[in-house]
Image (cartoon, rainbow, N blue to C red; front, side):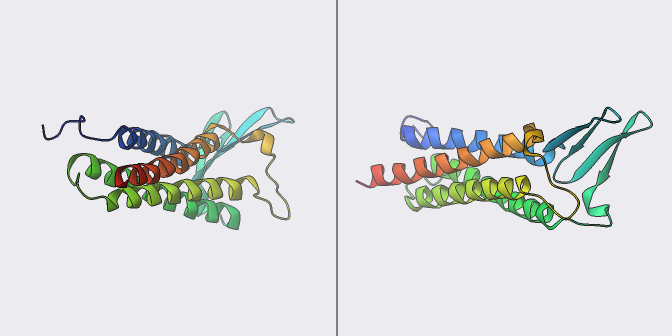
Length: 178
């Protein structure tokens, strides 16, 4: 029966689910502004920072500023943005190839390897980007790692899921091949 899940190896279904969930976690973490949240003790205000925006209350109203519009750029933040963009692209390609393998090109064994490698790349890029962000420091400012927030954590979980999914797809290729 074409289009049925009956002929698809369980490892491929599992790897595809893990890959899709990892993509969702990564998109949420990638797009939200809570990579870092700090409470200023003196003024009792909460400042939070994402990859693309920095937000703080101004006269009781929260204002967000695009990081690209700031006059000074931190190379750690720029490197994190690049790595997380590469991870997002690899995740999107991996999920696309996983579903192509399941429903369209079912006889193409090379898609196992390609999907596995794309998931591994996405996971490694996401994890390295998180490490670079966590080590952000310059002459005046160092991130306190105890203030890293949920967006940061979701990208880490997505990265770990990408690595795990990549391993599952490569094992599925070895299993089906033998």
